[in-house]
Every structure is written in C-alpha cells, then in structure tokens.
Image (tube, rainbow, N blue to C red; front, side):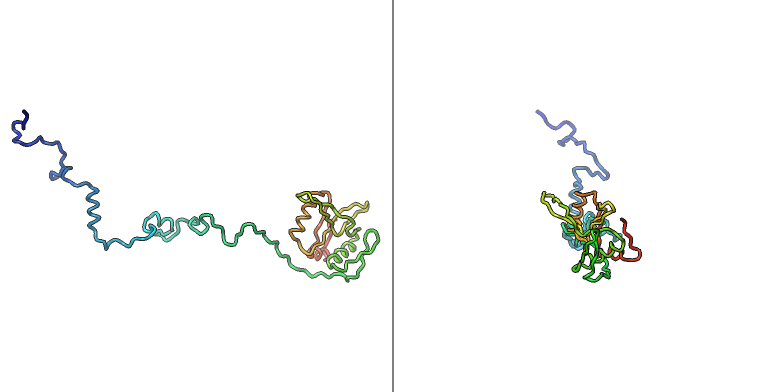
Length: 228
C-alpha cells in the first residue's frame, strides 16, 4: 500500500520548475505569441491606415514601383513600357528602311534632235531621255569611244530563271575591249541594285557605273572627270 511520504502532509512531490524574478514560472506565464496577438487586437482601429490594394504599402512593392523616400526611381528602365516583350512604338518588324532622298539638280540637256556619233561612226539620238542625251554629250566631249546597247548580259535568278540585262553605254578602249559599262537611271532603287548586284556576282570582270542626275551634274561641271 502506497501513500504520501512521511512529512509531505498530503502534498505531491515538488516539481523542479525554473522560476524567474518575482516567482514567475513558465507554466504561469503566457506564450509570447499569445501576448503579441492580444496586444495587436487591443490597438485602436483608427491608427491603421486604409489598406492599399496590390500591396503598395510593402517596402518590396515600393522598391519595384520606384516610390522610395528619396523620390528617385530605383528600377530604372526595367519598369518602363518596354518590359515584358513590348516593342518600341514605330519599330515595325519586317518594314524596309526607305532610301534617302537626294537633292534634285537642274541639268541643261541638249535638244531632243541632237545627233551623237558612236564608236562605229553611226548617229544616235535620244529624244525621249534627257539623261541619256547628257550622258552621250559627256562621253563625246571626253572623247570616249562608246556604243549604245550593243548586247545584253544573261542573268540567272536564284530559282534558275534567265533574264536579259543590258547597260546603256558601253565604253571601249583602242583594242575594242569593254572597259566600262554605264547604266543611266533617274534614281537609285532596290530593284536596280538587285540586278546590278546579281550582275556583279556573275560577271565580276566588267567594271560598271551608275549615272544618276547628281552624277551627271558633277561630270558636266568644270570639275567633272571620268575615272577611265
């Protein structure tokens, strides 16, 4: 038969419980979380500001939107409208950049019925083209032996089709060899450069020139000089 030990006066055994100041023990004090929750609930609701949607009041959200105390933007260009795959306004994919516009010049072309003598001694007239009359006048004044479209060059496209391409003036040397091919154009276009580039790849042995109104204006002036 067991019972209380002698001298205990009916009390249970003492517990080895650590005590703080004033005799406060761990069992008699409330946990810290419960006290924090009760303190938060005891605060008046008037001190709380209105809740901001989207987490604007948090320091992390403020750092992203640039709302710092110094008033400067911390995110830089990352928070702009170009973030997330957006392209700049005006930058359209697939559009070709237009060629720069050249300054128009005034050419003094010979009369439409002017006759120009080529290398073979035959007379050539260009009543429908002021630019060709100016080009023939320059070649004749520089005493160059030329012919007008004596033959064409076959060009092969990327798909294997054949196209005929010819220049306007063919300049010859004393041995009757072509030393320069001249193409007279009113302006430089992508179609012209496409054909000229294909000709250059297939016939790299022939030097050529493009004579635009600006080129003709320079060659017909006092400082104009041919490089051949």
